Image 1: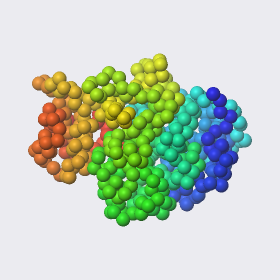
Image 2 (image 1 turned 180 degrees about the vertical axis):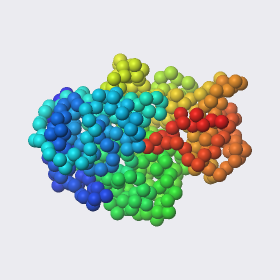
Image 3 (image 1 turned 30 degrees about the vertical axis):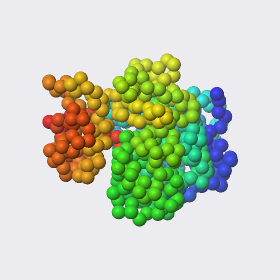
Amino acid sequence: MMFDGDLLAERARVTPESVALVVLESGQRLTYRDLETQIERAAGALLARGISAGDRVGIPGENRLEFIALFFGAMKIGAIAVPLSTRATGHEIAQIAADCGMREIVPLDALNGPYADPVSRRIDADETSALLYTSGTTGRPKGVMIPRRQLFWNGYNTVVNWDLRADDISPLYTPIYHAGGLAAFLIPIFTAGGTMILHRNFNVTEVWQTIERERCSVVLGVPTIWKMLMEAPEFATVDLSRVRWFISGGAPLPHFIIEAYQKRGVTFKQGYGMTEAGVNCFTMTVEDSFRKPGSIGKPMMFTEVRLTNMDGEIGEMEIRGPHVSLGYWNNEEATRAAYGEDGWFRTGDLARCDDEGFFYIAGRKKEMFISGGVNIYPAEIEAELVQHPAVSDAAVVAVPDETWGEIGVAFVVGRATEEELASYLALRIARYKVPRRFVFLETLPRTPYGKVVKETLREMVP
């Protein structure tokens, strides 16, 4: 399959006067025509720097208009965009640059320099458009090869399955260099012809003000963010009359958070996806979000999902569809381990499916541990811990034990005691699941997108 144009050029052709992007920092309100003009300038600036099709181009991942222009500008000339985390160290960036053979890191002010006339070229749908490097929580970062078809399919499928509309408005305050920042809502909203409100970073008060002032209709976040927004003083009084629904992804969402938002009269959904398989892979209706709390929904149209290596009703989830990526750059071993020859991607997530076809995440396969011959899933314990009124955050990891093989250690942010939490859990889950140790911290180590870095926690086990 071939594409002669690209997403933003097509959207600018169809609805040139619709507002595409509001940049809070500068106050700019760009129409799709304005945004496409910026992208064409970025493409020309890249050409003027000697960058051509196939070159890997590092782009500093700040939440700025210039990043968006350079990302789509690179795609326009067939270069491969490599978004770079704003939190990465010089050593980490050097590793990425060496791994992908990066041509250069293009500064965001490159749009202010000279630029050539953009060259129109036919783009194969399976050409790699971007390399999105994983956070590296399980070893050295791997560059996921994102083809153009993955971005397009994710956009189209999200619009159709989530019922996104041209009048939808959504804030973007998560890191834009991450797959979630780029593809969870930015590309789908652009596909639908809606409006994104670009925040430079996350600020609780500013986000609530944006939702109310800009009359946002659909809002994406991760569990940590939803909890912070819920605990803010604005939560009780902010006008949510224009919100059609909120949606959470990135990690399991505790039920008490869902219930708090539902009490404010807002529909709250859960999503699921990952960099390798497209960040939006499941869908559910508004009615089902109330009926099936905790579920990530059903697979989107044209998305196949199966469970393998079953342990009772829980199995490893595998996904197949046109939104699955090409593999890992320069890493055949990791690609073979995760991508089957028949097109199935092994997610590494454990899940169950009810009799109506709704899926529920049980945790990561690598995080499951066996204690006394019984499988234990940390996500189940964590979900119970964070419902304790004195606990604000929690994570469970496994450590070796001479008697039981492995035991659970809970890391807790809160004011409760070890005895209180052990007794509390014993009333809610089987005793063999209750962690044998509790460690209390001020905060949990997390990636920029909100996932707990459990490798760091294991290193902290006393």
